[in-house]
Image 1: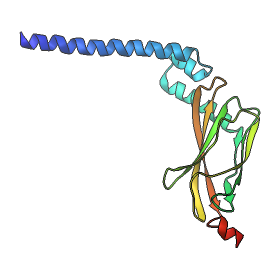
Image 2: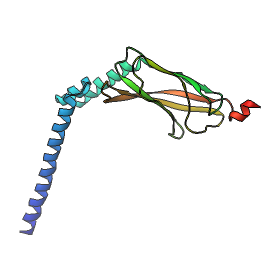
Image 3: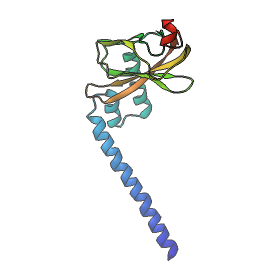
Image 4: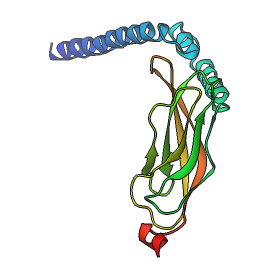
Length: 172
């Protein structure tokens, strides 16, 4: 009798988890069907995951052609502005944000606000006080639809170069 009760409870538990997963998937499909993103609509229609991943990657690669920034960003010192020339081209169908992350530490040293297509940021200021030197970094572009729905991200390598230790060294 005890074993029958345990089996019944275990079966009920796993049945409940299965039902919860089914309802969760239905909600996700409804949400994705309303999406502006073609790959999410395909996923909502039950398309194969590998095909959907390829669609998403193709869309991101296409839009990466329309964004740019300097590959070497120079700063006189860590508190000075640097000319990054971050641009989101007018042909891009996504708005985007840019994060510059130090490769050695994972520290975010710059983060932009939302940049709409056709707009750019000429100069940036870094977070934190880097010393004089070369800092290999990764610029991470996050893309968003018109309704600010997250569409994915791409990345490229950049180098941040601090010319002198601080502002006072520059004034001497």
